[in-house]
Length: 227
Image 1 (cartoon, helix red, strand yellow):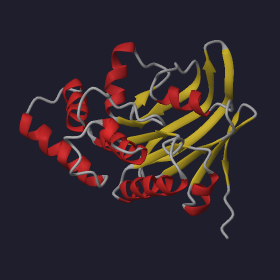
Image 2 (cartoon, rainbow, N blue to C red):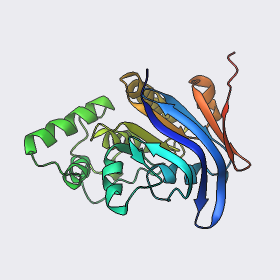
Image 3 (cartoon, rainbow, N blue to C red):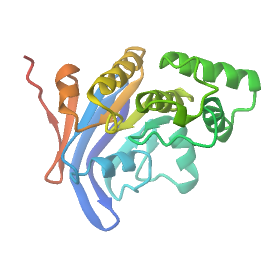
Image 4 (cartoon, one colour):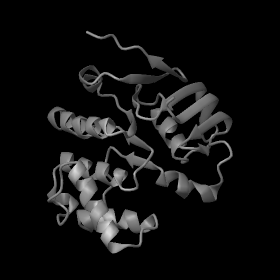
């Protein structure tokens, strides 16, 4: 039986006092690749922020990578985030340091001490995203697609149980978007669970997978028609 990585039962998601999504019932199992779609303002971002505890879960039940979102204490949030890899639309790389130093910063911040272990982990994740020779470069020396590959590598550093990709192709042209999807597909094939928020419907057609839609304060599974 596959392990449940993420589950909501009768959950309501709020942005401060405003109800954004109600009666959310969602399950994501280990190894799944799941899309989260919906128009701007439909609640995708609030859904994602609840998952990494940027927004508290006030109503209903929710668990993610063995953490209970309803009873999560402030002090446990860093430990939750270590089991998640988050990829943002705008890369969020530190512009004043090299790629290697960007990745080193994350490892040190999450408690790594051994220099050799850190070096080999950085090399391994850069290799996974096809960016092995770029460690000495600065973010501005890379294209948008290359920067997003680095952001994916950064998300992989602590071998997360779930990768949350929030519009990872939002700032990229169609060809580069496909390349980034190929990277994510490959990572998923290697056993990583991925939840990807997107409004790039071309990617859904090219890489069909389980799809959740935010619409009219609800989240529901969309059955894709196979062509």
